[in-house]
Image 1 (cartoon, rainbow, N blue to C red):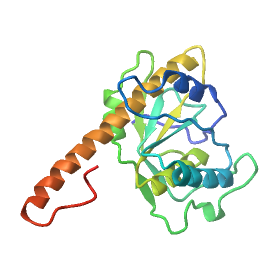
Image 2 (tube, one colour):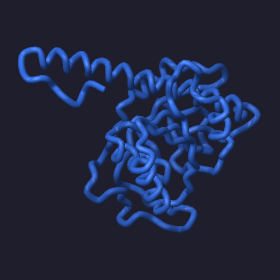
Image 3 (cartoon, rainbow, N blue to C red):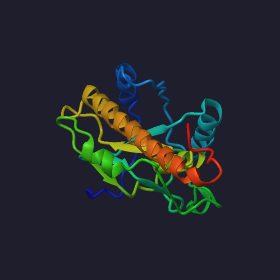
Image 4 (tube, rainbow, N blue to C red):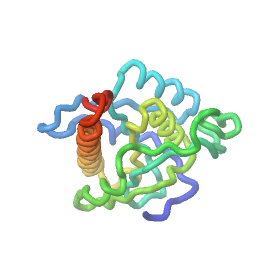
Length: 211
């Protein structure tokens, strides 16, 4: 795990989403990709994330935020419920610094970000995993997605675009990372199916795990 700057902020860089939309996720992946931009606004994010999960019913949501101090791409393993004390672009702070008053203190993604960071390889791009997403709007949105999606979400923090990291290279890196995340999900579900079949061999069939 690499050290993180404590005073990061997300910046609006729509080019990262545009480049990924152009690339897609690879011809061999039967996945529909939709890209949306969220504002740096706690209240708006809370409404939009809830609508994404209710209206679009995605199987997996990936949030991408910009950390201006980052020198690498960070894959965030989990999100925390408390500590959101910094104001958003409208000067608003969540009441008591809490995302969901009755929510668990920490929610982790079902994807092993450490495993993904070890396998993913994009020339010229360093990838690391993190357990602290920073307690700002991206972390806030991530917690909500993990809550609504029962862990079926991810947060990728990226450095700002630069000559060293142009939009084309960042788009390629995001494509590779998301492909690895989807493969990690499939491996986990295959393992669950195997365990489900074994456990049901001596009793009633186990439902809900075979998809």
